[in-house]
Structure formats: C-alpha cells, structure tokens
Image (cartoon, rainbow, N blue to C red; front, side, top):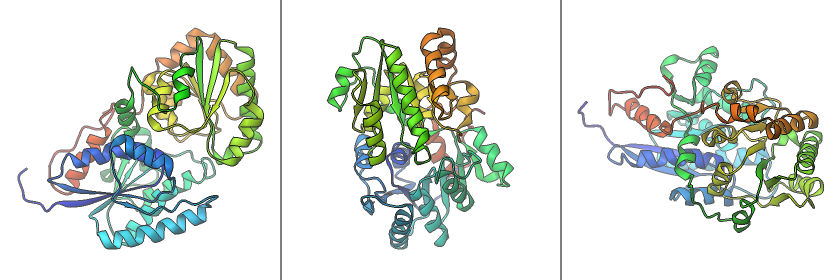
Length: 388
C-alpha cells in the first residue's frame, strides 16, 4: 500500500509497575514508526516509585505524570483523581487513539475518559476472565468495563478471544497477539546479571534450591494469607536445602503479617520490594515460585519454573491447562502438599517445567503495532495471530 496519511497521535496510558513493564515494549515498538505515530506516554502515578523504576529500565520518560498517589489511597480516590486528571490531558492532547492495558483502576479510568471524548480505545490484554467479579478484585470488574469501551481488543491468547466471542463481541475487533509480558521478560533476562538489590547477589548463591514467593492480593488478607504463610514456613522447616526469598509488598498489613509469621527463620529472607529487572532475573534463578500474582503466571513459563498459584481462581487458565501452573487455592494443606511434591517428585517437577509457554513468543508488541497501523490505513497486512 502506498498512500499519504497524516501522522496519528497515540496516547499510551498506565499507572502501575505491571502495566509499565507490559506496555513499555509496545511504546518502544510504536516509536520505531515515528513516521506514522506520535507516541505520548501518560502515567497517572497510581504507583509511584516502582512505576518510575520500570520506566527507567526501558528508557522511557513519560510525557505527562499526574502523580495522583497518596498514602492509604482508596479505590474511590484513585478513580476520581485519575478520571479528572486524564480528562484534562485528553482534552488538551486530542489523541487519535488511547492504548490501555489490563485491569487496573488507571486502565478503567483511561477507557472511560476515552469514551467520554469518543476516542478509539485499544485494550492490550483484553478478554481475561476469572468469572468471579470479586476474585481478583477489583480487576475482574475493571477488565470487563474496559472491554466494553474498546475498539481494538488485543487478546493475548485464544482463550481471551473465546471469552470475548461468548460475551457477544464482534470477531472483527478481536486480535490474538500473544502476551507483551513475554516480550518484556525476554528483553530483561540476562544470564550474567548483577542484582541491583545487593543482598540478592549473595542470596542466589545459596547451595540448594531457591523458592521465590510473592503475596499481596487484597482478597487474600486475613485467614487466607495466614494459611499461605504457615505453609511456606512448614516447607522451609522441613527442607534444609531450600531457601525462601520473599520481596514483601509495601502494604502495611502484608509487611506486619509476613514479619510475624515468616520472620526470624534463617532460610526465609524477607526483603523490600525489588525492581522489575531484579524480579525477572530472580525468577530465572529460582527452583520454583509460590505466588498469588496475576502477572507471574505469564512470566514463570518463560524460564520453565513451576508456579504454585495461591489463589482460588485465575483469569489465566492457559497456564493451568498447560500444566505450567498449579492452582492450589489458599488452604495451608493444599499449598504445602503440592510444594512438597514438587520438591520431592522429579517427574512431576519436570512435567511442569517442560510444559511450554502458552502466552507468547516475544512478538506481541510487533503484532499490536501492525494491527494499529492497519486500523489507520497505513498497511493492508494484518499479522498472523499468535498460536495461529
């Protein structure tokens, strides 16, 4: 195709570190085509320090930072502040398309503001569903709202595509791209890596097996998280060749509970939250991972590390179906049992480690940008779908 088309302004909106790590590869790809796109990065600052650490890693400077984060912020505050700030920026910038990612409050607000201004929306990571509106909360609700207002639905896998079709979305608006988290992880992993968190350079030299732990989800506060921590301590007590590394979330509740239940153990290392490159390279050096995270379900298969998912539901069933992730729930006995089996049954471990990666091939960002180019008429060609 050869035609003269005015350059289009693409506004990429995000507010948290997970969004940044998954959207920065898309921003980098958009900027490869500066003859077609003027790319504007707008961050709400829903998260502050960790967000900017991720931006620095990818060499991206935001064009606008709303800096809305404040201590003990509520969902209502974040929503009101993000919508008000984004509404002002969108009115001034007048973008041709707004790209948002996933299921955060920033994402939901970005989609709503775009709809207020009748601006096309591209939703990266569309179609994920747990089918339980309170798990994960509020993310399940947010992602459903965002899909409703979106014009381009970038589903990471065929599962997201099928979810959207069942809900009545038009096939012509849905594209299976792969997961940009895989792009980011491949870009970030280094076989020889010097950790920015100095303690990790010593901890990863442990003469045994490392279990990396993350736990922070709101719906797990209370009895579920207490049971998770009891299981982790039992595993460490009974396996002297195991060391646990847990970058503890900044939530005061999580930090106090982790200190009380996991502190004081010589092989359970509670450290402050770590930057994204440290986390990716820690995952690659771990034996297995225990987490209630969403994003880690996509990252651990990149490095062939089994994940024990400490949640009752998942919006990423592909990894469970592929046997790369085990959905354990939050009961102490279930978490303890599967972790113990993975530490003692080499056949089970190898089966999970070699399950393959159902989420991507490192080309998701390129597919997304090519689809946007097609949407605006720069090209007649659409990329081959991931897995197609």
